[in-house]
Length: 219
Image (cartoon, rainbow, N blue to C red):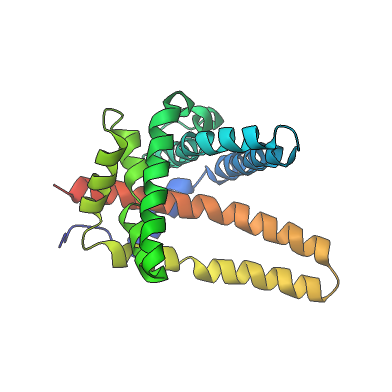
């Protein structure tokens, strides 16, 4: 059991500190990420080329997600920020596609047993993308195994860390439901969107700090 790790409240506090002066840029980056993701996936609805777009989106998804994580690793490490970081991992399309594929297969296989083992598996392999970002020389399978080693005895802590953001989700959903009940659906959707966009940088930065803290303290 590692004893020098930050507590979950300390991780969240560090994330808030790192985001000071960067909230606006981080929200804009998440917004661009969401919009481009919707546009890419939306192409699959075209009747003639939908299946081609779906395959390309699947291949692209790993490196695209890694680009978003790259941005928030920079936030966590107080490194220069640029929206261009979203596209920084596209040259490593294949390694991240393979990682996403292996990760997905493993989680699905565990989920076939029961939902709980599937959740545990997703937590066990949660650090693999960060590891591959830091170690481009690694194979996807090596990043998976390293994540498994790092998350030993840390799965419950990580689960509680993610769960700690549930209150914000509930608050945002409550605002949407209340405004919708008052006949203010459009306002409710706007408030919901702003709330999610503001929350995601907080979550991603906290997760990045969790990785850095765990990586630093894992042999």
